[in-house]
Length: 530
Ligand code: ADP
Image (cartoon, rainbow, N blue to C red; front, side, top):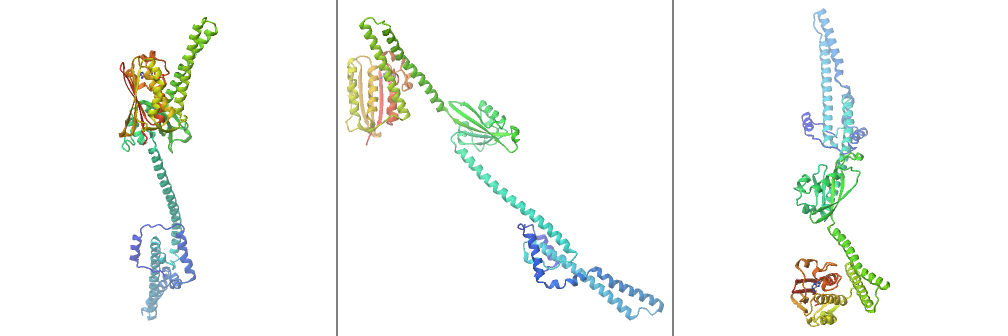
C-alpha cells in the first residue's frame, strides 16, 4: 500500500531525486502495472473515491448560495417585521455556511492529497522504487496531467534507452578500433624495414624503430612534427610529398632511393581519411612509406652481370685462339710438321684452359648454389696435404723450387670432403709454384691450435708477392694481379674456389699475407675434430 508523505518531505524527495535512468520499456509498463493491479483489489483509498470526487470546491457554491439566499430573505423579513432574523433562519444560514466550509476544506485536502501522491510517485519512479508508486486515484483534474506526464516520460525513456544502446555499441566499436590500432602499430613497429606514416600536412604520425635508426629521430618526441624537421634528405621528402599530393585513386607509388651506401625500394600508399572526398581524389590524405633495403640485391645483381660479362670474356679468349689456329690449319697455312705441331699444341692449351674455366665455374656456382655433392668424413689433413705435395713436386722440381713440409701427425683430423680439401690445397700449392721464380722455396706447414681447436695450414712461398692495393680483391672471381700475369696462365677463379671450399663448405677461414718481392703466405684454418 502506498504511503502519502507529508508535503515538505515530498518536496525534499523531489529535490534529492537526481536523474537515474530506467531500463528500456520498463517505465510505461511499470506505471501501468500498479494501476491494473489496483483494478482487481480496491484499496481503502478507492472507497473514498466517490466522496472525494464529489466534494469538489465548486460544489461548495450551492450551500453558500443557499446560505446567502436565506440570509437575504431573513434580512428582508427583518426589515418588514423589525424582529431581526428568526432563530430558524439564523441556524439555517449557519448550517449552510458550515457545510460550504466543510466542502471547501475537503476539496482542498483532496487536491493536496492527489498532488502529494503525484509527487511521491514521481519521486519513487525516479528512484526506481516501484513499491512506493501510488495506486490510488489522482483525481479527475490531475489524472489527465499525470497520464500526459507518463506518456511523455515513456517516450523520453525510450529515446534515452535507444541513445544508451547506441552509446554502448559505439563504445564497443571504439574499443575494437583501439585494439586494432594497437595491433597495427605493434606490427609496424616489429617490422625490420623502415616504415613511416605521415598525415595530410606531411607531419609524422607513426614510425618504427628501423626508421628511427635510419633517420636518427626518436618517437614519441618526433610524432606530429613536420617531416622536413626529421629527414634531411630533400629528394626523399619530395618523393613523399608527391605521393601525398597524388590522386588517391592511384593506389601505390614505387620508387628507388639511395641513402649513403644503402639502396631502398620505397613503396608509398595513400592513407585516405574520412573526409578525403571519396572518389573526388582530392589529395587530403597521409602516406604510408615502406622502405625495403635492397642494397644486397642490387649488389648481387651487379656482380651477376659483371660475372656473366667476365665469363664471356674469359671463354672468348681461348675460343678465339682455337678458332684462329683451326682456320689456319684448314687453310693449309701450316706447311711443315713443326708448325702444325706448334698449332696443335696451342689449340690443346686453349682447350685445356677452356676446360679449367668451365670446371672452376661449375664448381664455384655449385658451391654457391648449395648443389655440390659434399660427403664429409673425418680426415687426417696431413695425408691429403702429402698427396697434393706429391702431385706438385714435379712442377716444383722443374723450376728448381724447394718444396718442404711440416705436417702434423695423422691424429689431427678435420671433418671434411676429401676431394674438395685436396682441390683447395692443390690450388694453393699450384699458385705458389706458378708465381714463384726459379730457385725459390715453398713450404706447407701445419700448426694445430689447441686453444681454439683449429688446424692452421700455411702455404708459404718466396714468390712475386702481391701489391698491397690488390690484397682486398684477391678472392674475387676472375681477379688477376696485373704485374704477375706474365708469370703464368690462369683463370682468376682458383682462389675464389679455395675460399668457397674452406669457408662455405667447411666453416673455416682463408686469409692472405703478402709482400711484393718477398713472397706470400696463404693460411687455411679448419675446425679440428675432437
Ligand atoms: P689464376 O692463378 O688462375 O689466375 P687464382 O684465383 O688462383 O687465379 O689467382 C688469382 C691471382 O692471384 C693470380 O692471377 C695471381 O696474380 C695472384 N696469385 C695467386 N697466388 C699467388 C701467389 N702465391 N703469389 C703471387 N700471386 C699470386
